[in-house]
Every structure is written in C-alpha cells, then in structure tokens.
Image 1 (cartoon, helix red, strand yellow):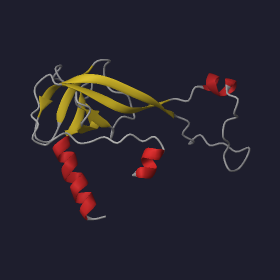
Image 2 (spheres, rainbow, N blue to C red; image 1 turned 120 degrees about the vertical axis):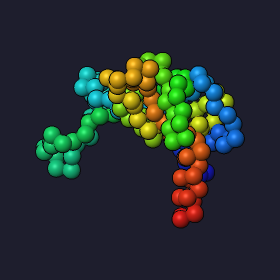
Image 3 (cartoon, rainbow, N blue to C red; image 1 turned 90 degrees about the vertical axis):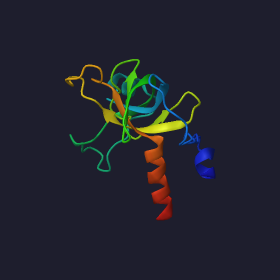
Image 4 (tube, rainbow, N blue to C red; image 1 turned 30 degrees about the vertical axis):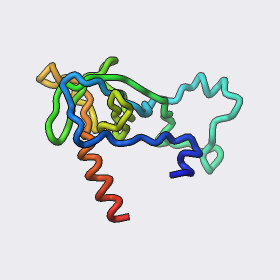
Length: 149
C-alpha cells in the first residue's frame, strides 16, 4: 500500500455501513473514461507512438483507446438492497467507469459503479441512470477476498 501511495494512488475509505442514505443524496463518480486515441495529438507529440514488437506490422485488433480522467456528480434516485441508481449531471456515464468508486459528500466510498440503465428504458425516471453496488456489498466482497489472500 505504501508503494501505491508513493506512486500517487489516493486511498479512499468506505462509508460507515450504518450511515443512512436519503433520496437525492449527492454522489460523485470518479474514474477514467475510455476514449478514442486522438490522431492529431499523436502527430504533434514530441514522442513517437509506440510500435508493435514486429516493427512494420499492425493489427486492426490493436486497442488504441486512451483513458481520460473523468468526474461527474449525481443524485440518488432509487435504492434496493442490491443496487442503487443515481441521476448524473451530464447524461449517462461514459464507457470505462465500471468498477470505479462512487463517493458520498464526505468523500467516502459509498459504492462501485456497476453500469448504466439503457437510455431507451421504458421507465423514463431511470433511463440513463448510473447503477452502482452499495458500500455494504463492496465491504462483504473485500472481507471475503481478504480471508482468502
């Protein structure tokens, strides 16, 4: 853990399992958006793009997407014991945020992003909402993983 912190990784702490959630509580989604590589930036970059092991071969299967820091806020709109839904301020979360932390207003981890409700969902109140596993489900997973490590 010390080595990770030396590399700049920020440690987050889980929200207290006893803390109550309220409808409309503000949450923050923090992570990395997966975006297409920008060809113009590559052309203007002082460092040449990395090449495959075989110098002049390229594959259409090479993934050239990049990770861009992404943060968005939202508000809780629905909760069940297994998952919470939150609206977001800029529309549906982008690709790449699944597995990232959801932070409460105190900066504590209140969940982990699971996915997005389809924008064409029949219930317009939740269409495009972010779905996340609540912190108490995450804690159960962490506790189980630590027992087997």
